[in-house]
Length: 412
Image 1 (cartoon, one colour):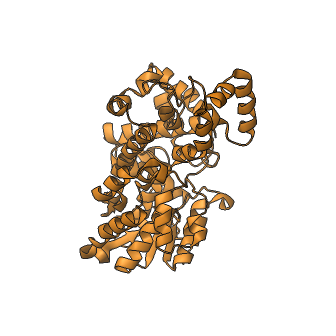
Image 2: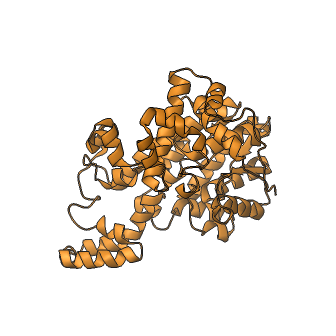
Image 3: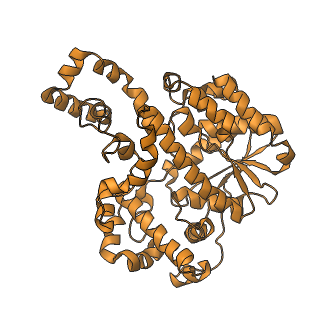
């Protein structure tokens, strides 16, 4: 399976021969990008790789930089780790929303917009990304949870064990114990008829919706005057036709849809700088192979198929086995008053009110990403709906004109 996947990926990259002089690769240092860059280098001789990091990340927690630079050093890649100035990042928020013409989902979208614009050379127009590999080959946060639960499933399949472990005193004691070692959710999602795993798909408490919930559900329902079932209604309408499939399949379908939305935004951001984003893991032949792969094979080890591909390519074991990172940035670094988004607070308050904004602009994950959505909406409404120019909006909120000096830091 891994051998065939590697062949298909190599074939997809080989088809880029007419554009070989325009190729550029994003190298985060994770498995997907490492496999992709290695093949790109072997097939087309591409010597350079790129990554980007937040200017407000703490140096001792910057896993993105650590992973990217260590992978580049291991591969012998000429690497550019691109870090914009805070001024460029703040301006980039408005510019990226204007370029995408929709609210941008991730803080990373702004980084990529600036990397496309300022970090890549003018001739590097076709940018390869490993987007899609997680969804297709069985590892993001929930897939890893499934893999860890396999022993619990074996217990559950035993009628005696299931009966004992489902009693309230035993379940309560085990949940308390496992919570101390970070396994409480696995137990809760495996036993009990009311657990997120076992409720019906149309129930907003279902594990599929609960695990992909970003933002504060209570605020969303209160602000828009809806119920949780209304929040998931459109996505449920799509997924209900697959309700008889396994939870694994449902999860992969759902996350693949998220990948499509993300790539749509990344593509618009790249287009503004004359670039094109290409995701070789999403070529039809490779997607079909991924769907045919049985879940026991995918879940045998973390990122099992891609990990095997990496070993076949001779990627160092230190990269193959190191823990996966989400490459996000903690809300503690940006979700607080007088932080990097302070200049936008008055604008957001005109839409949502000072009290609502103050309650969400805190370093709590759910609330912080509600603020990020508020910020996106306020900017999007001004620039896309009301037609205000990006420069006028930046001037109105007091952000100086012109670019800061972006730092293409740490070349290797």
